[in-house]
Image: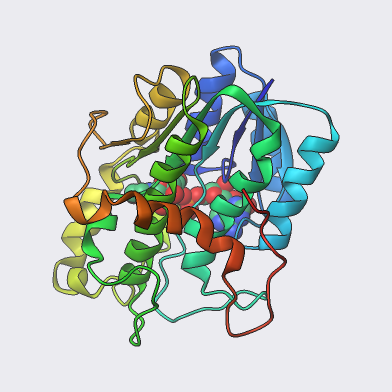
Length: 278
Ligand SMILES: NC(=O)c1ccc[n+]([C@@H]2O[C@H](COP(=O)([O-])OP(=O)(O)OC[C@H]3O[C@@H](n4cnc5c(N)ncnc54)[C@H](OP(=O)(O)O)[C@@H]3O)[C@@H](O)[C@H]2O)c1
């Protein structure tokens, strides 16, 4: 049985993966950069696999590689996320980058791994409290692109899909979504005021707070809910406590749609490979 922690060669994922290996779990970490990945795997005592999680094809290939090795997945921490950028960016498969990295990719990976998940799997989907900021229809991309809004929408969709998956798998599996809270990581360092216009006038203050926030601390909810989940279908805030979702996001139909949408989603550019049914 192995644990997968995505996007774990730096930042919150690195600390999550290290805590899991410290607890005696066999861990596979992923990232785009092979040098960084091999180095991190050595530090953590994990294995590394090179994946671009914004690519549907790469997520499908990872799931195929894992199932081809005949291993069951006992823990899946869909940690990868971010890409909060000022300009709308499109992946080679034609998907908006934030949607691809924070939602389409992780849900595609999870769907493709379904036959490989242990019956008592623990799934932790790392989202963000930013999900509350998006109040429009999450299945429609707004006309005007704003980095943080696109991020909020993608995290909301991943949160909704998490709740659907929790119902689908049922006991004894555990599927939860966590908000790690603020941390000074490569992703945070790459943020610009143009991507988060609301912070424009207080940018130096925001940066001062962000610099003090440790990734080690931010990883605690992921670690706790990967190792010792106390429920399923729960959204966990950065203080480690369960928090109810706003009423508008509790509709099982909406949640199921978010779980299924990546299977049929086709961007305007080149069509991505099909995500498996399930
Ligand atoms: N940091 C915060 O303040 C904060 C707050 C709320 C929520 N979160 C959420 O917490 C999670 C972790 O955040 P973080 O700040 O630690 O992230 P981060 O600094 O952006 O993560 C860096 C890690 O992700 C990998 N990565 C980045 N893009 C990737 C891609 N396309 N494919 C594969 N790997 C990729 C990086 O390796 P390579 O560069 O080699 O690919 C590295 O291992 C994310 O889901 C984020 O949205 C973070």
